[in-house]
Image (tube, rainbow, N blue to C red; front, side, top):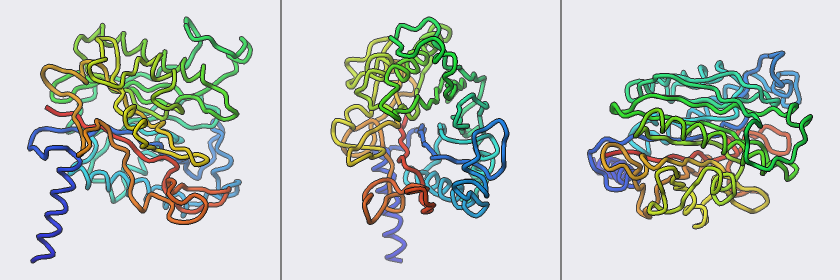
Length: 356
């Protein structure tokens, strides 16, 4: 009996920690997770998936694929245990197609969440897309759009010449529109261009400009709509793409009508990270919310989470973290040095909580 009571107490403390005050109000978890190359084992001539085939460089077998699915589902399930509920909205990146998402949401660890999928095939040369999972009992889907990455009418100073711009391909930006508690919401899921080779700051700024302009259009079309922008930004919240082009503000009192609150900015300054590279931690896995979700006078608004007063969470557990060797303390990834090591992702997931 003592052991049972202790387990119950731990669960209650975990719930209270995750949601701040432990109140019995309505709360909804909104998060993002880079799934690190969730590819199936089948050849798709339209995708650059050669490395992720049984005979490919990564020897991507059915057993490895199933292990990867189990690992991703385990993380999502562990977040649900910690929060006392599944995510209402979970944006994901680095997925090959709809099939891998169907396989993921049917995993026994999370099948009871009844996640529905919003996904479009995109033009990325690596063959990866973004997508959104949602619980239909909590989010009512209205419509969605796959927004292409273009260079038309940009105010960003682009370094690529016209030929390079025409050749450039990256992930589309996903916008999903619906309601939670009869309030209009729009969710943007993105995976902005890579930093490989030290390039792309202007490209990431352009991606943020596209999202921001579209979001402003949604705010004009649906006055009072609440918006969350999430994704692997390949930038920290202090970089120009987020601070300038997404109008991301660190403090609530700085957030004007057309600005976004950037809850992970203060966390980044405090030393938190969702991924590490050469000993340096970054938070690329960001979620920003518009004025009406940050400072709503009524209805749902972003909530403080945990005892330190932050408005965001970087979710990590020991099983998701490398425990020894050169990369001790880093996220426990799927591959290392080209070898399959059976880990989870090279990114930790992040989330926010909205409630009344």
